[in-house]
Amino acid sequence: MIMNRSLLIFIMAALAISLLLAILVSPWACSAPDGLEKVAEDKGFAGKAAEEPFWNASLMPDYNLTKAQNEAFGTAFAGFVGTGLVFITALVLAKLIARGHKGSLR
Amino acid sequence: MHIPDGFVSVPVNAATYGISLAVCGVAVLRGRKKLQDQQVPVLAVTAAFIFAAQMLNFPVAGGTSGHFLGAMLAAILLGPLNGLLVMTVVLAIQALVFADGGLTALGSNIFNMGVVAGIVSYAIYWTLKFLLPKTRGGFLAAAALASWFSIVLAAGACAVELAISGTSPLLVALAAMVGIHALIGVGEAMITVAVLSVVLASRADLITTSKLARSYSLAGQV
Image 1 (spheres, each protein chain N blue to C red):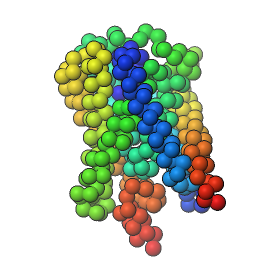
Image 2 (image 1 turned 45 degrees about the horizontal axis):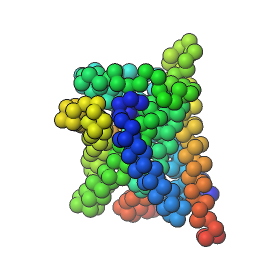
Image 3 (image 1 turned 60 degrees about the vertical axis):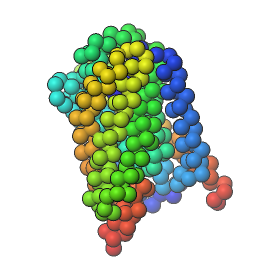
Image 4 (image 1 turned 60 degrees about the horizontal axis):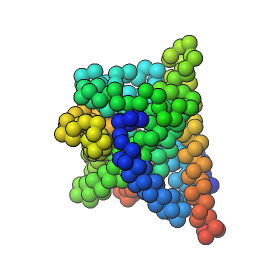
């Protein structure tokens, strides 16, 4: 991967900002229902949501640790893990895709 | 507007899964030819930022919250098909690890928040960019309006899926979803403009969908 110093700094700074938002700010996010949840409540179809999700092996449902003593810590931890996991997954996926044309270029 | 399991019927989910997978397939095939090495880490960090920003719900009117979506930001930074890959990674991890959005509804969620908000709405950005002055202000105005539309159109698509599924009558769902997301879309536009301004000031060359940004960057760095 061609990665000059300026790009590396940009990526690291953007990743650091993302992690800080996820860890430090997310515990203070507004906990009111979001647009769809509110519409579902107001229009009387909130009850149609499945009691148990189809996929019930989620590690941190609702961005929290099920056994966390402290909800703010659970949310911050979920934010840290999720942001890191998304970064790594997207990086691996994009590298695999970009590899598709490497042979023809080099 | 992450749809949980149970809101959308099996046929609707099957159709949206089919469309979403097909467009993702096109995005992967095109990426194999066009994805530049420099875009690889940018794609990854865009996904990470969008995941983090989506956790930050802000209050909107009437006891409701909204959060940044990021589909238009990703499309403007990386192109609409690469942007769809970003949204798909974010939505899949949200569904699988955090139970945010049902796995049965993942096809609908990728359709609404990736295909509609990223690719369909990109046509609005493209048109506005063509019509507005080729300046920094014109670029940011196109991004602001297109990101507002991306939220409203995605909410509209969600309402149509709810209606076809028999969950809520079309006009009721459409009015309610579009109404509240017209407000949330204002937040989306502000965050999109703020992030693009920072990228424009630091590494404008990374905004692949704007020629203006490239010339601006060269002028700025001299």
